[in-house]
Amino acid sequence: MASISVPVGGAPSQPASRPRLRVSDYLRWSVDHKIIGVQYMVTAAFFFIVGGTLAMLIRLELLTPNLDVVQTGAQYNTLFSVHGLVMIFLWIIPMMAGFGNYLLPLMLGAKDMAFPWLNAFAFWLIPPAGILMIGSMLVGAPEAGWTMYPPLSTLFSGDGQTLAALAVHLLGISSILGAINFLVTVKNMRPAGMSYWQMPLFVWAIVATSIIVVMATPFLAGALTLLILDRIAGTTFFDATKGGDVLLWQNVFWFYSHPAVYIMVLPGMGILSDVLSVHSRKPIFGYKMIALSSMAIGIVGFTVWAHHMFTSLQPELRIPFMITSMIIAVPTGIKIFSWLGTLWRGKIRFTSAMLFSLGFLSMFVIGGITGVMLAMIPFNLHVHDTYFVVAHLHFVLFGGSVFAIYSGVYHWFPKITGRLLDERLGKLHFALTYIGFFFTFFPMHFVGMLGMPRRVAVYMPEFQGLNATASIGSFVLGLSTFLLIYNVIASLRGGRLAGANPWRALTLEWATTSPPPATNFVGEPMLFEDPYGYGTEGATAYLDAVERQFGAPPQALAADKSVSPAAQGASGD
Image 1 (tube, helix red, strand yellow):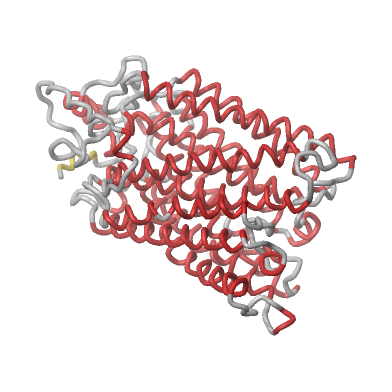
Image 2: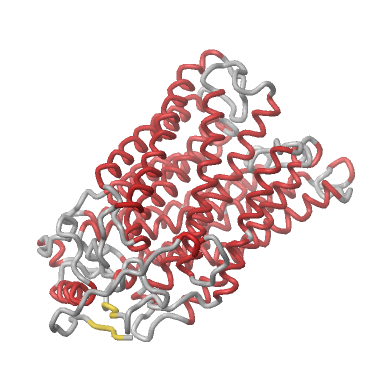
């Protein structure tokens, strides 16, 4: 592979033809990582709609203090239990895996993943798991929440709880297989001219995420196995009356599930690093620190699990976990300040992708601040199991992960399909999402501090005002999703052609046709020495060479080739 700083000029070549997309390619077994990536993303999007529908029913129920939508508290338990399981295990985690599958080989200049068959097998575990999860609502639905705490999940839930546990088991196997594939691909299939310090930060995020998955998910698998045996084989691992230990589940579950937060967030942070640099035309500020902070999050994330158990933890053990829970904010803060440094005096283009990345920054900072608040033992004891925790979780996972997913969709949709999403609809989608999300979850901080417990359908009348605000905000948030769906369908049918590199980006996935051919690249891919080296003559020459080979992007979206004074003198570290 060629590694160049200033490509050799020449006569413009005939632009490469765009591969034709066929729907049937995505409905069958394939070992092409690009097809598998789209299969992941479309499947995850379907379950996002399912989980979102359940969320709308939850918020409709909470519009008033009494039971209106459901007839019993058990039915309400089912709504929030399946909602949480679907959104985490069938939406965010598979969606991030979809981005990784599609983009990682392209970013490395590889023709495919290291283990193509294993890649396909990992995906095809997801549809049957999804069927089990949805089917669980029909046969004695699960009622123990997404955390599945015994004895609620062992003694007080129907057969659907077993199906839900089996579904999560399958999804865990899928995640482990995918993570192994990612790690081997990065280790063995990087091109000769690409060192670890030349990899895009999205690749670094996938590496850190995969390490967490490989180390943490087997613990969840073990806990789920014990839970299933308690339910169907008569064992008593979690039955305290027969020598078992209820807290065993909490320890093992959170040893996986707190790192799982970073499984969902770290790929989004990788997306942010790419989008902010491209759309501000600035070298990424603190490249090595961002990369190393991803690894630090992966390591420190294994030392904080017990802060979820402060109310049941021995007092002398609370302090160490409080300290580690605050320490983990440090590598995240490094990323935040590095992104702000990237934006500073940049030539910012407020595209839909950029707006959602900026939305991530603002919402995730709020989630981070409330996370530090929850790390404090006295405050944690006060708001434990209240709506404050619900607000914090959603500011991290929706304000963080989902905003990043939306940003990635707008940024890489042209590469995946060869067509541009409508920017006017994209900006309207952002505005409705931002407003709807904020008014849905920000009031929950206050209702939680006032003492409203989570997971209840009937609440005190004095909480109705804030709950009504949250419910109205959620309806706006739900409406915003249909804008994206319409935008995707309309753009697939008749959107503007994007060209190979509409954003004039330097990472390697843009140095090929949109969508890429079966072998990913036409001839030998051209690797620029710095994936974030915007504002240099070498970068301009490289981008011009890519345009000569594949054609120029649409004039209206082509990045201004001039650069800001700050970018001229910036360092990529």
